[in-house]
Length: 158
Image 1 (cartoon, rainbow, N blue to C red):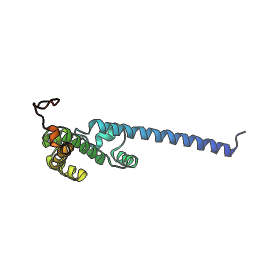
Image 2 (image 1 turned 180 degrees about the vertical axis):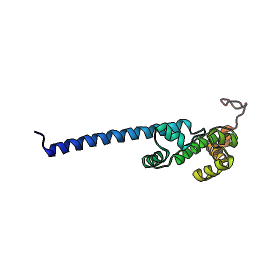
Image 3 (image 1 turned 30 degrees about the horizontal axis):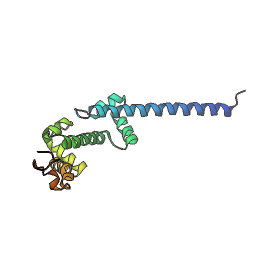
Image 4 (image 1 turned 30 degrees about the vertical axis):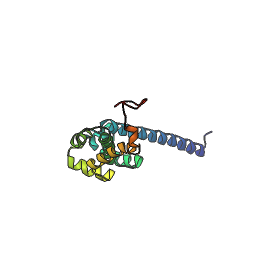
């Protein structure tokens, strides 16, 4: 015979399993939303589009995203854009305006402001520092290593 205590224990176990399933579903949907941002951060993306992709209302999504990842969706998008801008500024010769547009910013002013806020330097200064640091190890090589003479046997000619 089923006692009241057994019935409550069964109810508790069922409630616990249902809560775990809901939590796993929420985590999956939030991870999907973050993946959506990762794929689309360089375009026109807004809170409504991200929340819709995760099947949440915008306010509920904003609260859950911040709780799970420690950043608001806007902060996450901005960090992704600035990180990509750093890559482009260091690895390409693209003009800064093109980098700005390529990572999803609509104005050079807002890009420069956000870049400076996150990196500590404006984009042009960051590019100069990256390029300078890229060639800095060569400054440690003695000049005679680079001096090549056709008269010296065993050396490559320039």
